[in-house]
Image (cartoon, rainbow over all chains, first blue to last red; front, side):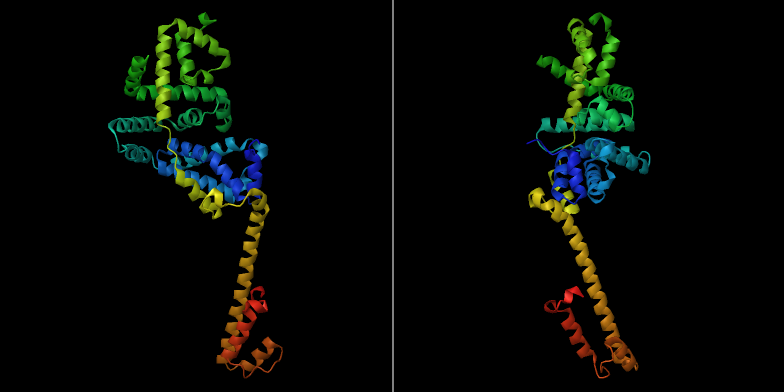
Length: 192
Length: 169
């Protein structure tokens, strides 16, 4: 049996169907968290964002109008806009300071795990240094696997603009992560 | 076709689309593969793009298994999906349950208001010197001049008892 479309689940949520809400949460919560994590820079902020977004959907399901497009695209737009609102409310510089603390989070355990955790933290810090729109495009493309056409729809811009954002973002990331790339490149080369 | 591609275009395309051929534009993919096969610099760029993709993938957000339950609990009162009734039963009842909860709340509020008013009237009747006219007005001219607060409390208790339909007041 094919899965119930998100849009039909939203119709049910409008009627107070808690299980339909749970199904939407199951399908989309991690995507909203991913947007929050990358854009706001911490797991806690991502969790808060996901909670706010989904509680808003439960309390005001009429906020989504299926005539305006797919639920998934609308939800990602809502999440990204909520992140941008939060970033604008925070004082300049505050985000980077907070991220420095949050991202220096070496996981306990074997040495290799610690190295990988530190590397992941440096990558997250590099992504955090990207301008908002570039960061958003990277998250949608790499973390969530959206096509450039979908990203253009979510970000309410043209495909050409998305391509420009992704190109600039990846060039900047290569620059910021040159050491990491060199280490990984060497390993790839050794592996064949 | 590969002659039409140069290293700068190849690099620009990798910057935009990454190393996964599945994300490459269909009209460019064949040229990119061909260029890569014949140009060592292109292969090096592709390796670099793969490494960047790998870094991005490895730093992806970790899942938070507790969050789903927390959001469900905050929104619906159920702490896990299994605790929510099946859709066929829950769709309408959940909607009606919300309405019923509101109706019950309104009913309880009305009951409380009537009881509070009665109690206030009783205290006032009992303590003020205006017992007769107020009692007559409240109870339709019954002989209440001698009704004290205890008796009024009994009346209120009877009226609010469930077996007497008290919660429908």
